Image (cartoon, rainbow, N blue to C red; front, top):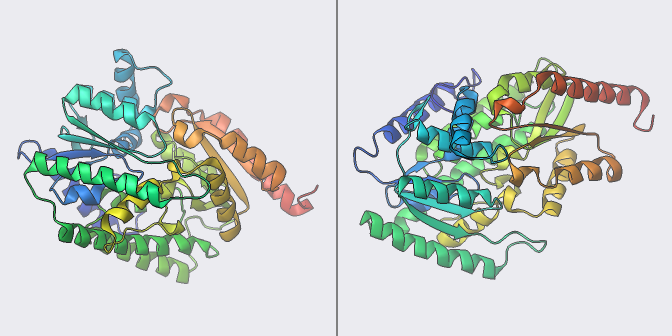
Length: 419
């Protein structure tokens, strides 16, 4: 996702590189220019609101995954553990603390200090402690937006009103900090760009229903989703998604996919193993396995489930978007979504990558496996490593389990599911 990261060679590479190079360049000198900086989380983030006040948006989760891909997360994690953080603490948190201890010098430039830490609690209680710690270390202002957990009956009017009231309090704090008065007209304009980008992103995701899928909706989608996570609310994000959509349609028309021959279609649950990303992907590519849907590519927003920002309902739609984060859904809703993905994308199997230090994703995954295998009869593979800590990736063990799983799928095709 950074300007220097290896990305798919024929999909928006130049545009993405230029966009993100500009983004990181602006971040590197933001503190020196006296421009406000807000740290945000990806799930359910409030970036449109922050753009109204001229904040630069920094996403510590993205910094962590970038450090993982660039092979420096391990050193950052060790620094945090030397400070006293437990081995069980989220690898993203420890990377962020370790990055701070290294004077915020990352492989993609120096990350600015925050003026405001906006913690939108969306199903992960680690978020709160993470930003509380950063507020202590940096002496920055901390703002918590409490988001009701999504229950069986969905989002209620009371839930929306509760979050909107908090957004109005956040607006007042932003006005006081920046001296910039809130403009609803400006927010509507920003939300218009967000909605356009979201519509295009959903069209891209739905192209994975084609046979063969023109792209991998897990291993490739993590690159394509960078702008909608980092640059949402800008015309540049809209232009980028439009270009990617055009490229994906070309791939579809040419029957060209991410592997020479699509042999297995899988749905993937859980984040990738960033420090060993390419190796992790190759373990599946060698079997001709293509992810046609994944939950991680929706971590920034469940747009394909109807979640949209709406310029005509600015604060209300921001509240609904923030609550509609995948990690803020109850376990039954998450399991139902995985089942629908398997059915709608005509997948052969579900793959669950359970990560040691990410409880918001990993909770309930063992139950998912039992339900899919024993109740739904859907072949399911569950593997384990970590999203940030390279020490928990055991390639030989993973290869053995993945190979055995696809061998069993091959045998299943030859003899039938009841053999």
